[in-house]
Every structure is written in C-alpha cells, then in structure tokens.
Image 1 (spheres, one colour):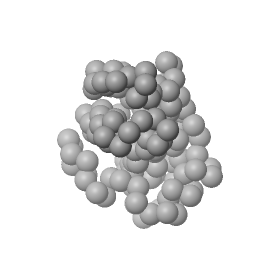
Image 2 (tube, rainbow, N blue to C red):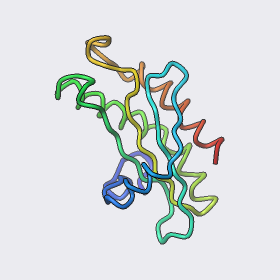
Image 3 (cartoon, rainbow, N blue to C red):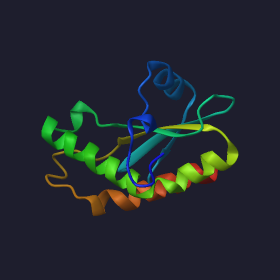
Length: 132
C-alpha cells in the first residue's frame, strides 16, 4: 500500500464487496450532514487493509460537478488514510468503506473546494475508527 497514493488495490471493485457493504454495513454521517460513509469490517479474509469507493448521486448535479466532488473526496481520503489503514493492519481485517455526498449539491454549492470537504472526511474517518 502506498503511503500517499491511492492505488487500484485500495479501491472496491468487485460487486461482491459492494453487495456485502450495502447489505451489512453501518452508516455514519458527518455532523453538518455533508458527507456520509458506509463501512464494514470483514474478518477472516486473505486481504488486510482498507478498500474504498466514492459515489455521488446523479441528483446532486451535472457530470463535471459530480466528478469534481469525487476527486475532492478521493484527495481528502488520500491525505488522511493512515487514520483507518493503521487500525485495519493492527487488528488484521479488511475494512470496506464507501464515501458519498449526503447534503451537497450543485444548487447549494456552485463551487466546492477541498477545505470544505476535508474536516468532514476527517470527522467521518475518526467516527469509523472509534466504532471499530
């Protein structure tokens, strides 16, 4: 696992992982309701670490805006991923996390920046860490 990057091995790609995550995962929401995360700790697997996905609903805005939000979510996670990665490696499990926007849309936020998303991402990651 790269310390700073976000490699393809760190992303949720299989439909089995998505199904498992959405069926059995727990949801946490940031305090100001901007971002939510669904997470699930899977024990007894070959893989150890954290796998993430980033989603933005089509209702949130146009494609260019949604892609920007996804890039910002990825960057906020990438810069702070040690919060979750160290815990998953210590306790020997695979952590699946899907981050998505909850209350952010193009009408309310014409322009959105990393400094608006970063505190919410850190808060969510700490909530996930504390609940494991």
